[in-house]
Image (tube, rainbow, N blue to C red):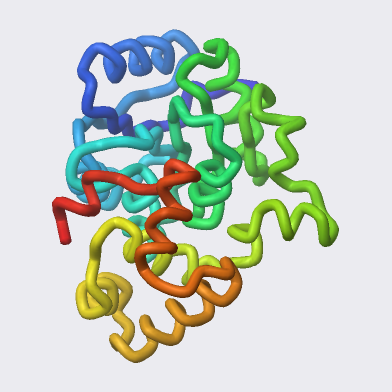
Length: 221
């Protein structure tokens, strides 16, 4: 499928990686309209340039790729948002999809996955690296729910969970999500019940075991 008219913004804090992705995109006929090195700049650039796609590194200064997606979705961006990551953890993929990612690519995947993902997503699908398939991410039934309690969280509960385990207070979370601190407390109680965790220490331990904490959020809190 012809990709020539597709515009892309790239966000990765490693210049050599960003330049490599840009070269790969250009070779496949994609038009790069902007590049940046951190999450806040990515939000600003995507909102200003309105590209068809944004390719976002999972770990960036200022905001993670997932946080960047949440900000863009909250701001009304209609760009197709793609996460580029080294993580193969089911919980990490699930977190990205719950935030609103349209695609999840692995950095060690073959270059053809980029064009495959863009074509698939542009046609209305959600693309996940085939290297991750078979890991049970979307298996259904009671057993899978017991094995992965994160799957029971709503998108807003997942947001509150992410902010809590990275050190933000209820008031800060309320400001970010534009809800009341009391509502944050309601979500916190609900997600703790679903995860069978009884205090913040247990919640942080749960997140660390699944590699769901990020220093970028901790610094911001």
